[in-house]
Length: 153
Image 1 (tube, rainbow, N blue to C red):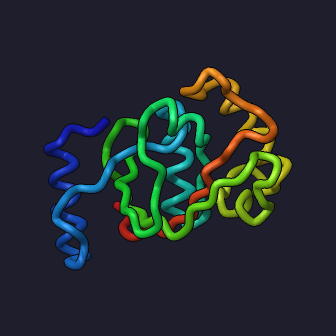
Image 2: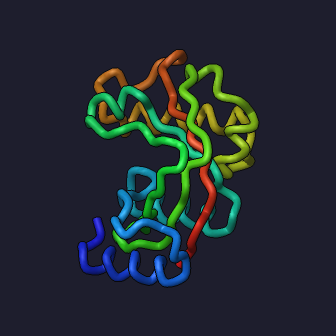
C-alpha cells in the first residue's frame, strides 16, 4: 500500500482540481490479487473501459471490510501501491454468482467483456484468491459495484 505521505499529496492534488471533495482521504486499494493484475485493471479504469467490479460478499465477511456504498469515494492504487485514480461508487447490488448479468460483465471491461468470460475468470479468481475458506460456489453472493472515474493521474 502507498505511503501515507504519497497518498496525502495525491489527495491534495485531487482536491485542488475537485474542490467539492471532502478533506478526509478515502479508502485506498488496488484491484486484483497481484501487482500485475492491479496494473492491468487500473489501465482499464483509466481508459474508461472498466466501470464495474465484483467482490465476494464472503470475502467482505472474512476481512471485516465494509461493503461499498453509493456515493463512496475510493483512491485506486497501482501495482506498486501508488495512488493513480479516484472513483465514486454509483451502484451496489448483491446477487448470486449465477445471476450476475451480461451488462455487469461488460462494465467490468475484462477480456472479451462477455458473461461467459466473466464467469470463467471470476470463478478461477475466487478459487485461488478468496479470503474466505468457502472460496467459490455457483450461488455465492457477489457484490456488483458500478463506479465512475472522478480523477485520473
